[in-house]
View 1 (spheres, one colour):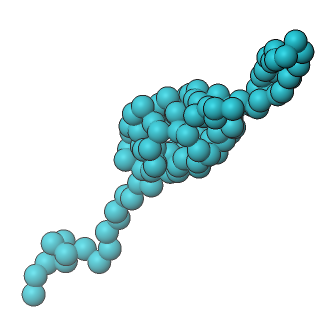
View 2 (cartoon, helix red, strand yellow):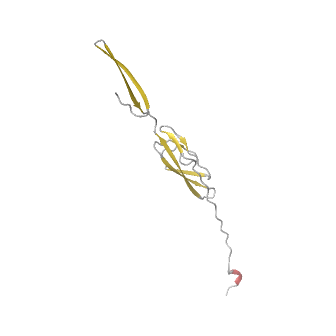
View 3 (cartoon, rainbow, N blue to C red):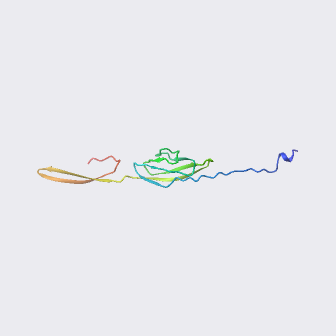
Length: 131
């Protein structure tokens, strides 16, 4: 047989467990349609946001978001040791308020003057209606 020293009965192996990053997608965001805001992730060294729709750059911690409808975004953060974690943030897009425009005009006929006043509700960024 072979000597016992070449094949020990037991061995010790050191196993390291890398910590998962504590990724934070930030607080919920709310803004009016037609505007934009910033997302803000922290807790990792690199980031990927999903979906990428409406983002200036989905591969940075703080992309500009200019989506036209409310959306939940998920960020995946990667630590310097290659471990990943995710978090989500809700972006709410509020419709623009309605504006009231008063239209006043006068009609003169047969020596009479009739003044007509009417209100028109106008929502910005919506095709106007001809009255």
